[in-house]
Image (cartoon, rainbow, N blue to C red; front, top):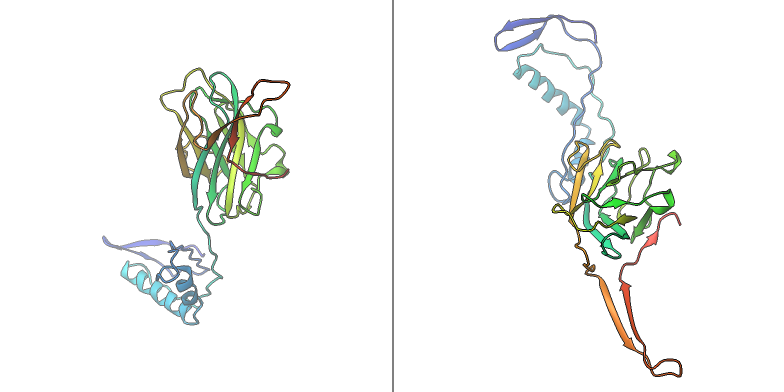
Length: 274
């Protein structure tokens, strides 16, 4: 733009001393409805934006708004509408928490999961926050597993950056997503070894958070767009999906009778990346 001076015309308006000369770029966004029949759905809005007379309507509305605000009238020579881009916000549901055992002062495998109902490109990190006095026991990258549940694609973690998880805090793990990567729809889970304290704290809540930056360090961080709060388990509590199976084997020459007690987990996962 060329330099212009601003002169106060009256107490209720502002006017430029000379007309601006340059390029004006207007960015705007619209919250879309998922129902394709709604007026604010992508299916209804896209054809309107691509109509030949849309630039004319855009310029006339801008000029009217400038006049209504008492600003210096501007002359628009041309209006070009760029190709629209559809940005889907993260739509995640079905948060879950699984634990292999709940014996006090032992290390067990804990798995936190969620389901993305559509793809998203806005997430830069996934944050796991443990309850107070619970501590993760991650020592190497191999101790942490990203699991795929029902989806076709692996989670696009930032493997090219080397260490793609931040484990510096004993009660927090931050998973880094690759730059500009798309998380496709599907279920994902995160499995890690966790030390169970002698007694659970009053605030026995596990958090699974989706972040738009890698700076997130708590469920209340400004970059957290979704935070799932999952009630924790108590000492000695079995997971609801645990089944105890008992059976009596026939008498043999080696034993009088054997009772087999086992724990079967109804939790099928596919490892991402091997």
